[in-house]
Image 1: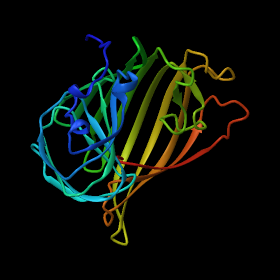
Image 2: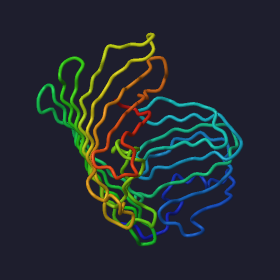
Image 3: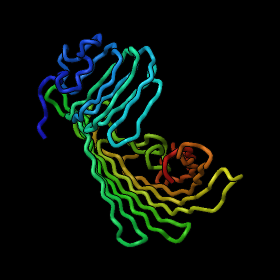
Length: 300
């Protein structure tokens, strides 16, 4: 990929900010920004179909609420009242129709492709009861001739159905951070996969994690409101490298535990409440022998 070394000009955007009927208040092109294009302007009533661009863009409404209609090609029409602090994100490569009759003051930001993110995933079925999902991702930032915050990750998830209510789950992942800023790091602890240890217990520029779970999808249905499941799990992982390593316990860590999974059929969200008890295997004296975690997730 060729990394650009030129200004991000309005000519690479849809050009809304420079339309004669709009009042331009501030413009990033005037200060030489390269990785993104930003403009603050008061927009006149609008009805336009904008062509597909490689750059995603974000609109942040500052003042003057108005009713906005958006129709992305291939998706349903969206309509709503957008006011101060509302954000609208439009992905790259989409033809989009816009309409409003107001005079909102907005901040519009386009992200150049050099603020890049690439991801690929693939699913396999080794047998009728097994599913394997593999993925890889790459993200980073390019500015002022320098690549930074480059994160490469790979992962795999394996599901084995064991009857109507039981399922075995295994997941492995690895991440590597290069050219980080001073405060950038990969974290590992109770909040991101290693449930038997405190939050953000290890840090580094490399991270590996293995999780094994035996899951039970029970028929318990409390008050016709809550479905309840359970899981037994083992986590093994480590974060290392860079200036932020946990000097007191820098090696591989492991834990085991059990937990409940509770979901409601009467709410619009798909969150599953995770209640876990985890027991660290090689804890230092300052770590509690039992870790209690309560967290909402979008999956079991």
